[in-house]
Image (cartoon, rainbow, N blue to C red; front, side, top):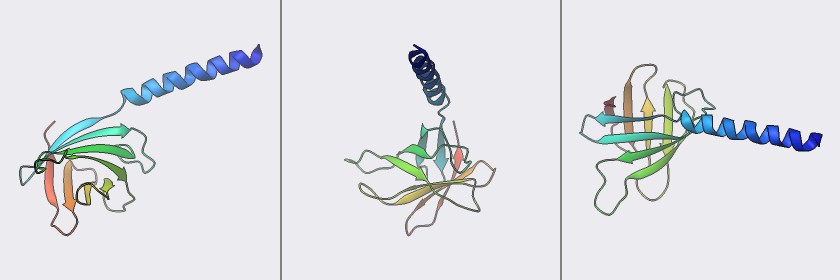
Length: 123
């Protein structure tokens, strides 16, 4: 009987924690200096690196060519000089990273081999 109560309490605590985790996920939109819009949505709100967004985010790029979805999942990567860095590597699409500059609201969208685009939050 005691085991079933402990199991029930643990189950309720887990469900409440999972609901709270889901409720705190953030989303925002930034626009870059080349007019690219980037929709950012947290898929996992916990940040092991103390970034303002979680360790896994989903990014939707507005300037993808026809036939490509423009939706990518980026994982947090360690950095010393930025307020956050998330990286996409692998198919489909090019490798790129999304960086948040310190505590300022300036974001950078950096594709491999290209100069980073400066972006500002619009929503």
